[in-house]
Image (cartoon, rainbow, N blue to C red):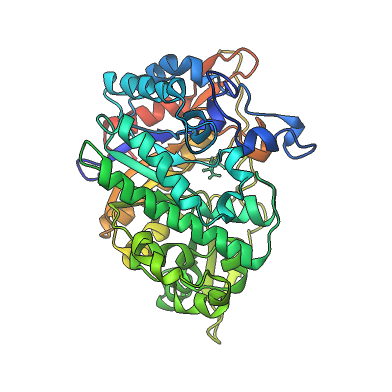
Length: 453
Ligand code: GCO
C-alpha cells in the first residue's frame, strides 16, 4: 500500500510555540504574552518569550527540515507580529520575517502551508472584546488581506484557523488557555459564531486577493469515536457519537457538527439549533453563505480517540482505558484507529480531501550518552497511526497529506516546555537542535511515500 502520488508529507509548528522574539522588531503583544505573566497559568511560569528562537534560527531550522526530507511545512503567522494592534498599521519588519521564511522554504523546495491564526491573538483587539466583538470577522479579514497581499505570489495553500474547538473550550470556557476566560453559554455561542464568520471571511479574502491559484481550508481538532469492532451497530454508534450535537459538546466547543456543518453545508445542525438558536445573533442566517465559502480540503488535528460500542438497548457505551493501556508522555491514549475512523467519518459526511494537519505524541526524550535522541515510542506511534490513515485511503477516503506535530520540541501552552512533541530535540538552555531517531525514520517514510510503513 502507498499513498497517492501527490500525497503531501510535512510537519507542523506554530508561531508562539517556536518563534520567541516576543517584543522584537515592532511586534505587538498577543494574549499569550499576557497570559504567561499570570501566576500559575503555565507550568513553572514558562513563557514563549524565547521558545526555540526560531525567529533568528529559521535558516538552520529550514535546513534541518530539508535534511528530514519534508515536502511541506505548516507554520503559523503571528497576527500581532504583522499588525501590532491587530488592525491598521502593518509592521513591515514583522511581515518580512515571513517573507524570508517563505523564500528559504522555497529555495529548499519545501512547500509553505501557513495557518493564519494559531491562537496568538492581538492583545489590543482582545481589549476591544476579541472574538466576542461582532466586528472580529472584519478584523480577521483585514489581517488576512495584509498577509495574502504580501505572500500569495509565493504561497498557494492556506489554513485559516487552528483548532477553533480549543479556542472556545480552553480559551473561553475553562480558561486554562489564553485569554483565560470562563464565559456563559450565550457568549460562547457568539465566540463560536464570530470564529466561523472569520474563517469564511478569510477564505473569501484569499480568493479575492491571491496572486497564485489558492487552496484553503480550516484545521480543526475533531473528537473521534472509534467502534470497538466492525459490527454495524458499533460503527453506527461511533458515527452518532461523532456527529450528534449535545448540550455539553456544543457549549464547550467540542461538537463536530456545530462547527463543520456551517462550514461545509451552510447551516447550523437542527439538533444544535434546538439548544442554541436563542443565543445566536438575530441575523445569523445572513452570515451562513460567507461562513460556507467553498474550501478545498478539511484539515484535521488528531491525537487520541475514544472507543465506543452500542449497548443492547441502543445507547452508546464509551469504553474507558483498560488497565495498563499504553499512554503517551501527556498521558493521552494511543488510539491509532482514530486515524482510520476520523478521516472516514469526516470524509463520508463532508466529502472533502482530508489533510492530517497535526498528529504525534509527547514523549520523555533526552540526549543520550551517545549524543543521539532515541525515541522508539514516537516511531511506533506514528507508524501505527499512519498505517490506519493508509487503510482509510485504501477504503476510499481522499487522503491528501500528513503533517507530523511537531517539527521540533516547543512551548506546549499551559504545559510550557515539559512536553516534547518534536521530531527534532531542542535543548532550551543552549538552543542546540538534535535530530531524533524518529526524524530519520520519518525521512524513509517520506522517501517511500509510505510504502515501508
Ligand atoms: C493543539 C495545537 C498544538 C499543540 C499540539 C499538542 O492541538 O493543541 O494545535 O499547538 O501543541 O496539539 O498538544
